[in-house]
Length: 120
Length: 345
Length: 70
Image (cartoon, rainbow over all chains, first blue to last red; front, side, top):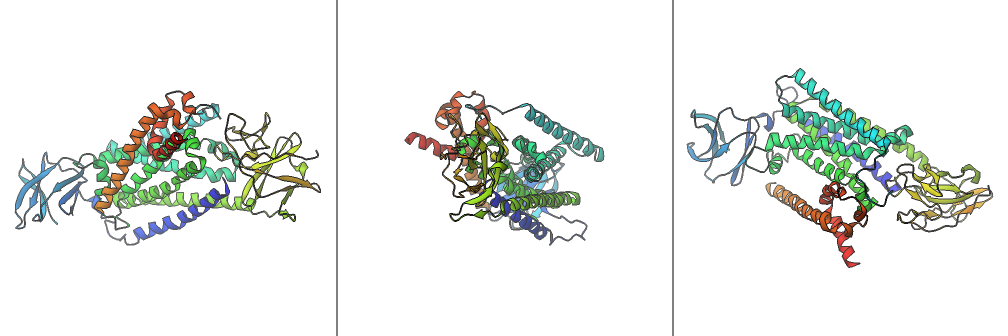
């Protein structure tokens, strides 16, 4: 190594030594380890839903057991609106929604069972 | 050194190392699979593949990062250093399998692009503990791809050693990203205390190895030479350097090798242009300084590789006064011819 | 954040798309202009170099440009 590279290595390792443990501690300091579920984050849920402006994003972490899962929009009065689309397995699904949409329903159309109801 | 490019510059040693790398990887994967299915018969194959290849890549990354300081602390590790590139490419391939399977398992079935889904499935960018850890892994994989794909000598030659080395220093950023990827993943998915402990131990081991090596180097570099009135440094007696060999001295922070060839002394920069090998630890073969790492050659009196090769290193002026070898710490430009001085022996 | 992600991924895919095209050009036609040593090397070697050229194409692009001018 030339002198410059030796110097760069020195600073990089000092940086790693200071920064990484700091980030790790900052990341976990707010966690409540006494709680039964220490992680409690979105990926533990079978489905996580987020509204991003004009579209709703549904992340399916654990697939539904139903043969078919349709997504309906929830209207302002809580009733089912139009079909937004279908969920098929793990992955992220984006569906366009209108401003009137208050939430979503996931329904098994064959057994006519409501699998999930979520308000934004 | 060659006039054309070869797939891999294999020799008997390298083949042995490559076989060992492959054997090690396969053994680890088989053990991981067997133990996973024995301890948890319900686990699905994709999950085991993701975990097996991911953990394999991280272990290999730790080994790769330890080789540099280990070989500076103990020369017995040097053969590992010469073969570090193959280990690096193998590590990338393991990480790639991990990444591809993770993207397929978690992001491929939706209606959005799987790569976009990696970035948007968890939008908690403002949080530290819930930060989308898969994004960190994806970015690390990009860096590792750039490094692995440019590890051939063709890129060293065409990108220039400076840019190449800079590009390959990206491994430290990749390391930091990977550590945070695993750390946050461990908390967000299954809160594995063992994983976090192993990461910490790995970090402490690597940092202490690098610090120890740096302290050792600093001791060598920190030596202060006596100066004459013109600022030349008195480094040694001429007889201390054996015929066809060199001694290495640090002048103004740079290492210089003073070679004795046919009783005459010449000084060149100690760092080989190919991969930074220590020229002063090599010897003169067929009239040329030969790098101990990969056999790149230079003429001692002008620091140039013999034609048709084009590598050049800096040269330095020497003089002998009162039976002491003095060196001018101001280097000449790369490839400048300097008349060798008679060592009187 | 959405916009930032879209821009980032847009740049990334653009970079790799150009890299892919450029690497194809280099490996099929322009190899000699990039590095004369490639002319004497086995053709198969270019397959090995291909991903690296995709990843670092701006450097080779600059090199090709300098070659044209000189």
